Length: 325
Ligand SMILES: NC(=O)c1ccc[n+]([C@@H]2O[C@H](COP(=O)([O-])OP(=O)(O)OC[C@H]3O[C@@H](n4cnc5c(N)ncnc54)[C@H](O)[C@@H]3O)[C@@H](O)[C@H]2O)c1
Image 1 (spheres, rainbow, N blue to C red):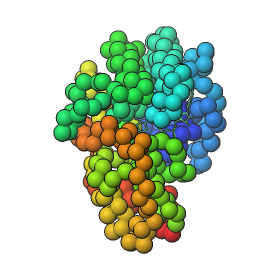
Image 2 (image 1 turned 30 degrees about the vertical axis):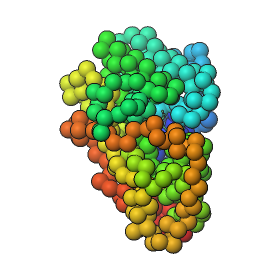
Image 3 (image 1 turned 90 degrees about the vertical axis):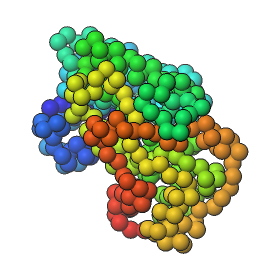
Image 4 (image 1 turned 90 degrees about the horizontal axis):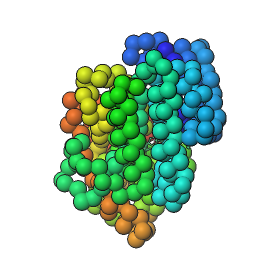
């Protein structure tokens, strides 16, 4: 089986590649080739005996997707994208990558005769817009309030139509916020949800710009990779016509996140969080969804962590080699 991953150098792309290398199989079939594409060069996965093609370039550039699809990968994980903050600041870039890149990929697939790959697309809960019900069901209308959410919603519609027309077997997974995001702090407005756990655990101070009462839904990078792999195994019959759906996650307040950190790493670590309210971040976060009704995902067998303690533990195991600073 040949697997293509777009956005392979990104956080989820790297973790997905590593997990697939470890498993050696997808849907029971042996993986013999990876094509890893991104604007920045993806790393060659360690410990993989099969073929690896590292392709560097803009997926939305003329001919780029056709070149990738000419190799007829069996499964495509389409993760390439720019994050919400960037898509809001740079209108052109957001539409270019998140929409034109997706369309180029879908068009390349459509034009390859007799080819029908599995396409797993990472959408986002940003496809929903306030005002929200208590818990957002999959059937909640898509009225995004950001350019990023709009680009993801359009991509979902395209994916569903290409699926309906039989050009591919698609599935779109609406990811909640992935936490704890490893690496350096980034400028995303949601960055603090990860920062308040990641930074104290590695001995650094973290800024909390919102109130402790802010509620949000999270899943770990490990869970996100699990969603992608599980999605790849779902059949057309299982999915029906509504091929995009929200993933499960842990719904909790910032106070509950901090309590979990203190329980696992001790109060000294949790004391590294400094409260510095930021009006702008508070305003942005107030427009985000808090709670998702992910019953359909659960019925289809998607699983996430049961509580925030598990998310903190997953980070300590996967990123810190079990050690807390
Ligand atoms: N992390 C989250 O909390 C979250 C939540 C919801 C949805 N998602 C979606 O999941 C996917 C992966 O997320 P991530 O956290 O790994 O993001 P990331 O930013 O770490 O990775 C995205 C990758 O896409 C690449 N990319 C950007 N423009 C490109 C282009 N024109 N051509 C090819 N590659 C390009 C980037 O270089 C980057 O490596 C994205 O589509 C994102 O929108 C993520």
